[in-house]
Structures are given as C-alpha cells and as structure tokens.
Amino acid sequence: MKERARERKVEERARKSREEGERTVLARISEMSEPDRTMAERLYEIVTENAPELTPRTWYGMPAYARDSRVVCFFQASGKFKTRYATLGFSDAANLDEGVMWPTSFALKELGAAEEARIIGLLKKALG
Image (cartoon, rainbow, N blue to C red):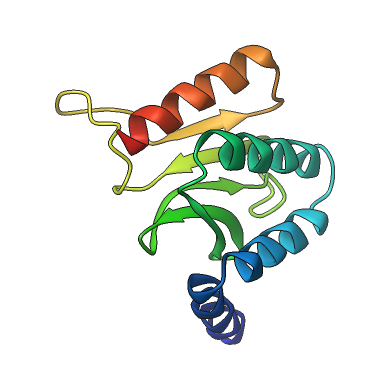
C-alpha cells in the first residue's frame, strides 16, 4: 500500500511534467535484471519514436505509456511476478478491438526486428 501511495504521488508529478515521467520510467527500467532491462529500454525507444503523443509514466511499478492520463500500454518485467517471459500489455484505452475477442497482452522473450515491427503496428492501431 505504501509503495502504491508513493507511486501515485510520482504519477501525479509525471502527469504535470513529461520529463518527470521519463526519469521515473528510466529509473524503473534501470532496476530490472537482464534480459528485461534490454527489452524495456528498446520498448521505451520504440514507443517514444513511434508514438510521441504517449507520455511515459509508471503504472503499478511498471513502465507505462499514457495518453490523456490513461495508460495505453505497459511493460511487465518477468521478474515482477517471477514468470518465464516479460509481457507487453495494452489497456482498454488501446483501440485494438477485433470483433468480440482480441488479445490485449503479449509474451516477450526477446525483441528482434519482427517483434519490433509488430509492436509498431500494434501501437499505431492502438492509437488509431
């Protein structure tokens, strides 16, 4: 509870200042172990280059990217819940709808060119 309360204060400052959000996200990424750190750093670059309208912030301790204060996507390191893969997730603010059922999260074990291209496509669709 205390961690979430601290995070909410940081999130509020991040809403007011993009630079504060960037600092907070990059600090969280730097705390990750490999290979999560490398994937999170690359994902940060992908999002900032291809979706500059999204603001970096943390969300439940995870790097996230928001539009109008609503998280659109987030990265969950495998170490967060001791899983065998990291997760790229999208919230309901992302326009990924396909009929009545569609994926909102994706397992990541590594980021290559094919995965990066798919993520860019998902970002464009999510913001469309």
